[in-house]
Amino acid sequence: MEFFLQQFVDGLANGTAYALVALGFTLIFGVMGVLNVAQATMVMVGPMIGLTLLSRGVDSFWLILVVGMIGAGLASLLVERVALRPFVNLLRVSRSSDADHLAPFIATLGIVIAAQHLAALIYGSRARSFSPGELKGQMEVFGVFIGRTQVLALVIAAILLALLELLLRKTRFGLWMRATADNPRAASFSGVNIRFVLAASTAVAGMLGAAGGILVASMDTVASPYMDLEYGLKALVIMIIGGLGSLYGAVIAAIALGLLEAFAVGYLASHLRDLIAFAMLLAVLLVRPMGLVPAKSTA
Amino acid sequence: MFEGVWAEILTLACMHSIVALGLYIQISSGQLNIAQAAFFGTGAYVGGIVTARLGLPFALAIVIAIVFTAGMSALLSRLVLRLSHFFYAVAMLAFGEALVVLFQNISYVGGSLGFRGIPWATTRPIIYVAFLLSVLFVFNLDRSRFMQAVRACGDDPEAAQAVGCDPQRVRVVTAALSGALAGLGGVLYAHYLTVVVPEYLGFAASLNYLLYTAVGGVTTFLGPIVGTFLFTALPELLRFSDQIRFIAFGLLLVAMMVVRPQGLIVRRHLRSTRRWQFGRAATAGTASSGAETTPEESLVDSGTP
Image 1 (cartoon, rainbow over the protein chains, first blue to last red):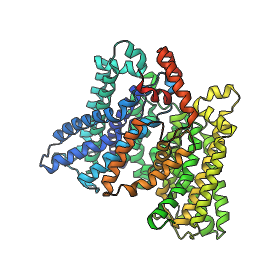
Image 2: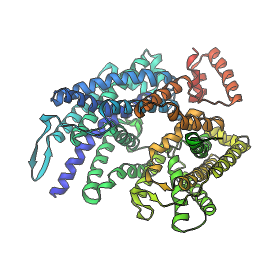
Image 3: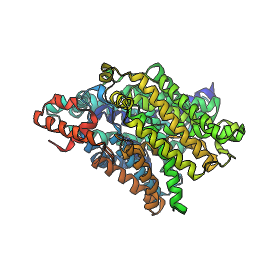
Image 4: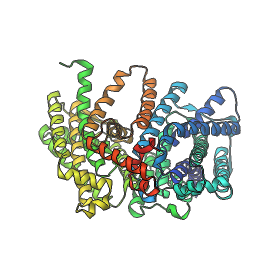
């Protein structure tokens, strides 16, 4: 029972960090109808900024989180300007036409490749230790060890999710985003500045991705320039499982994936961990191709 | 004629071109297969098993590998028939990654260390002949009625169905052709390098084929060939340190997609039809004219007001 609870806690903490990364993908896909692969890069940018701060002797997790998120937000703005803005015409007119996204897909992929090797050039291609001092330590509750990072991951993810929900439901900017997601043409006719919405949602997505990346890195206590594809691919899978463009679906799918992975590692074999995401994806696609929570219900 | 590094690059480019040509056929039918390397790698493993484990001749290995990957690809395509573009792509991705893990755990073919001891059988002339035959095949296919049906189904399956094409049949047949070419490339590769590792099947390898095809262009069979040769030679041409090379490569991709998203090589008559459509869209200037153009066309349209 304690073993079960231990896996549950580990899985839950990992799942919420996945959720943050996946939400970034989902947000951009929901609003723009294009796949921004460079969202995966932001998962790596956050921890890399953290590494710089750590090497300069800044040992505060909160500072790393804030600076990392801001840095990734700015980087996302740059990516949007360079690799997404030129394809602004691709904005889907109706849901059925979100087919041919090869050009922005390849362009953002180019960003991923360039950024990955730039990071490897600056920080070295080996994984480096990433553990801000104030994160060390764990507590024991009924025989289950809960690390301080795991508690922080849950709390931070919950706060960010609540903030995102507030942003989408209660602010004018959120209204613009939802309008653009629903019908970009109509939104633009009603006076919404689409380009601003695109840039801003990319930045918000990048900040979420960086937060997810920093949380994952501090739970694993390592960060490497190559963590982008590993977690980016998982987040992509989560987005599909959850239902393309569906925010709640992405959160549910992320936590489900985190739990399943933890149980697979605990009860089966650790090398199966990376198979779980794809097995889950195949199963969901065959049984329920629209995803767990179809996007219409939450858009 | 060709010596040393450049002969090696030419050989590799010919082998990869065969696989990219298969992907080109499949993408034309609207199936964005982002796991082409999975079929390439399966062909390599199957071919290796036939020669190294069963001791059968190389020629038989080629045939068996082609039939196996074609069958596998057709079967998979049939299985995920109802998934449309994006879902299809990700299902393929999942399939490819699952295969990697599968091969990593089969000790009969070496597990995660890779399949070693495959006899060396692929000479350069064999590769050149296989390449020329594949190009000839796709060149002929490109101008056939079948390929017209493929493109119609890729552009708009419902409209294609209305004029008598069967999109489901087209998808399965193109998947089989694509799988066959990937298997051919794989079996040649296995008997050229004499070793296969599970990573050959993975997403990173598949991305290469996607890049070759997308950057070269998917409107004519020349696109993937040019793309493959360019990308195989480019790392040699950009001789800096490894990392700077990849940074330049990534930025080049971005620039390429922004400046010329339809790919390097574009089919002639297609270009002229599109220009005609721009004129109409520009003069009409209504919302509906934008909706009529496919995403690819509106993408090219971006410059005109």
